Image (cartoon, rainbow over all chains, first blue to last red; front, side):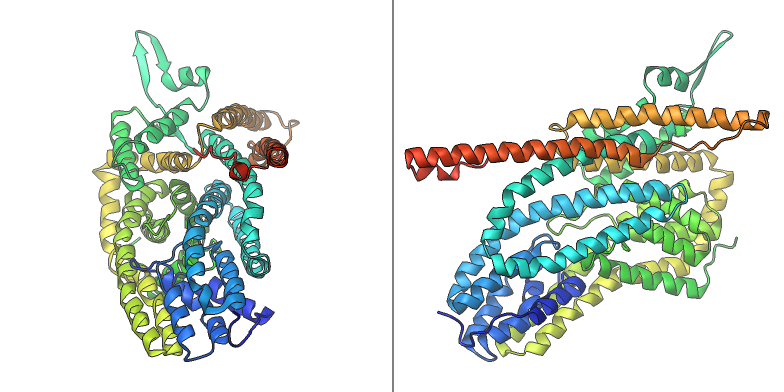
Amino acid sequence: MATKTNYKLTKKDFNQINRRNLFFNQLGWNYEKMQGSGYLFLMLPQLRKLYGDHTPELKKAMKTHNQFFNTNPWVNTIIQGIDLAIESKEGAESLETVSGLKTGLMGPLAAIGDSIFASLLPAILGAIAANMAVQGNPFGVVIWLIANLIIMYIRWIQLPLAYREGTTLVTKMQGQLNALTDAATLLGVYVVGALVATLINIQVPFVAHIGKVTVTLQNEIDMILPKLVPGLLVGLIYWLLGRKKMTSTKAIFTVIIVAVVCSALGILGKG
Amino acid sequence: MHGNIIFWQVLLLTLYSMYQIWDELTIVSSLSQPVWAGLITGAIMGDVTKGLIIGGSLQLTVLGVGTFGGSSKIDANSGTILATAFSISTGMNASTAVAAIGVPVASLMIETDILGRFTNTFFQHRIDRLIDEENYSAIERNYLYGVFPWILSRGIPVFLALQFGGNFVSTAVKVLDTHLKWLSNGLATAGALLPAVGFAILLRYLPVKKHIAYLILGFTLTALFSTLYTNVQSLGTTMATVSKGFAGSFNSVSMVAIALIGLGFAINEYKRNTEKQKLTELVSSYKDSSQEKSNDSEDGEIYGDED
């Protein structure tokens, strides 16, 4: 059964949803329904066109879309595109299917979106920007902005694509995305290795006087492997983070306290 | 060096702190990141370089920290704003400001973030009621009201700290520079060490065990090259002062070149994966057609090896 109005979404509709997504998504975020009300807000005008104002169908649809929802904010409109494709074909009777689809897709899409857009890209772009920034160069910061503008464009075009392709889109892209994520994480791990070797300016200022011989410890360490100290420290913090009840904030404060103590004892110093 | 910040600076910084959380939630333009906060605060306070240094250090500290599933994260952006503003107005050392102001502020702001997220439930309950009343424009309005808890959760604390915290910070700087020199050195060391935490957190989110070979490659290649480049650089600079005929420019190691080597490895990995995938698809389609068993058709997945 089609909807009563038989409305088909136009380019204008997609633009409206995209505008709302880019500038207002997540503003209603709360502990109870998370992005739930945002999901409704994004496509409320389209729901009204599909079902017509003051109909029981519209009320049912609004209630369905005001439920708990949370996914990665870069990929959420893929789910909304697929959802709208189904609803405009099958009307209010499809709302149960749509509910299932939403909960079924939000987890896997969040996993893909979070790993690429929320951790990997900001980590790599952030590292480049920060690397230049600590040397007083603002150019890397601008690169980051440009990269994110490109990502915004992708977020803009994914909605009509998802609407056209429907559920097939997810299965079609699954394999390719897995290969891409794998290659991207490889690059991420490699870059972190490189950053450890350049951006942690820590050394051991300890100088031992044995009789007439002075031994500068840092020189000895450099003979074994340059940047050994930063490498070991990252390994140590990595291990610390893996312990039970350890959070990133706790780890940061632990490091500050340990650094102050070690600096006072003359074991560690700024390079 | 009285530690006070002029009112228009306070106002601009407060406005920026309110804008950044909106940006972070919606368009994600990167303007909400600590490096940008450092650049913008530095520009407002009149010392861009110092802003970039503080923003860059805090950026590295939170490199791997993200919000997943709606958890609050350490607010390095507000931390950067306050650390940069006070560091410039009181003349505090940049690394010290990162550890002494940036990090404590960033973690305190987790509380106001939670408060903001909590307050939004109020508008949420209104929306529930308005759906029953079929009041469409009010639904949208109340949704958009959600912006206020968010921006105020950043704006109010940043404003109060900038307006009233100046004297406290400048006294602290004086004491740190004279009586507590060891502590100020220690905080500077901590500031230099904090990126290590960022890298370690990042590694926790990445499949390290699977790609351990590339971690070693990235680290060792860069360690060797950067030492080599630094040594050549200092050699060259010294030579240039000794001999007038000796000229030439010496740069530090190019991180883009290092990253390109990594990109090469990544491309190889991608190609290997897609080939493997095509092969398994071929095998499974062959199996399906020869055995005509519908039960096995779901076994095409091979990528279960997430760390």
